[in-house]
Image 1 (cartoon, rainbow, N blue to C red):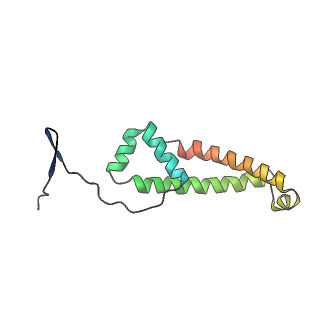
Image 2 (image 1 turned 180 degrees about the horizontal axis):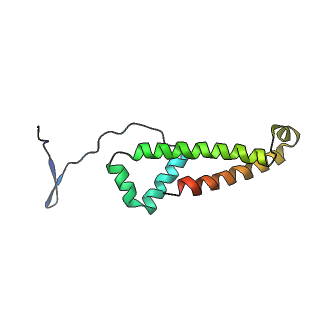
Image 3 (image 1 turned 120 degrees about the vertical axis):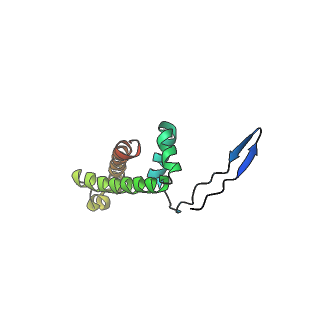
Length: 120
């Protein structure tokens, strides 16, 4: 078995090991994943550090982002159908449609934040 050579850097009176995390795949994390990252850093720093040092943070955030985005679009569709917000309403009265869709999107946003983004 081959031993790994460890190098050190002088920091004041101490020699600290030169540690480097392996490269993680480049994945674009969307708004939901970024919100969850901020939540982890601010409210669960140990969980954040564990994901980071185990090189699982990027995959975890990408998964959270996908789940949240899927849930958001599904909720918007379901709430619009339930409240009768249709393409015909958009044609007949665009301002009412915009107001109601904004309300629906805000509701869906709040649900996704509570269920996925700000939840462990």
